[in-house]
Image (cartoon, rainbow, N blue to C red; front, side, top):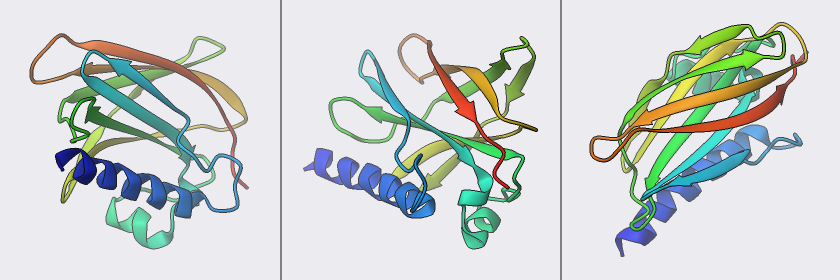
Length: 151
């Protein structure tokens, strides 16, 4: 039963993201990685894809140059959210590093982490996300994403 509740939370988050992105090719979260008992889901999208109400609720500036990085951690066995310390950085092809400052967001039975990053043009970024769970060893997820300035 707990797995169903956890799965519903994730489905709700993913449905929210799909609604936010409706009509765009990048509608679905970009990826998932598994580290031991933890599933890490990630998505990166332009902040203009957020409705003004959602952006205001989370204090995110809607701008063509602002990108949102969303990290969700789930227990692989129960589907329940996992709280952890989340840090990261994004590096472009010129090796310029942009530190990411993640904020923990808690909503009913969901926990996720948001960071905002500025980009000025179409660029490819390599993301390195370090997660330190309350128990167990820290781990690092790495992924690459091409970002676009949304006019």
